[in-house]
Image (tube, rainbow, N blue to C red; front, top):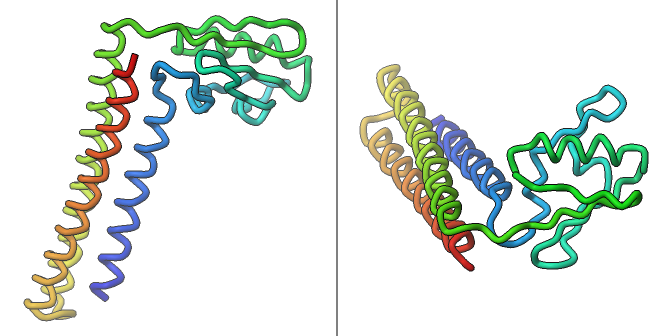
Length: 185
């Protein structure tokens, strides 16, 4: 029973870290990365459709993204959705594809992005710690219900702490890599 509780907790921690990793992928660093467009939703014939489902997104050059929609009539809607987004990019529509030039980030903007990513990292760590607390409560409840011995509960709590430490270190590593990527000129 304790193994199931621990496995479920570790799975939740893993999902939390994966969500954080995907969330950071959409943060704009200096280079063109198609993942920065993942959060953009386009009003396509009355349906809210993710941009990455409307066409091919590519990064042919380090500072350029191209969007080649499968349906050319969606060009205008895609252009509007990009302009409405908080990315601060100006789409250049030539009638068949949209080009997005990624401007060089200023030092001030880089510092803001690093602060923002650190805040997201701290939120992820809090999430992992909350999962640890929930699992620890389940272990205590199991021990009180005489479903396991005190020694087994102590070992399960130790294993839980090791898993928590592992995922928090992983978050720190992801943060460090992203900070390096953002500050790179």
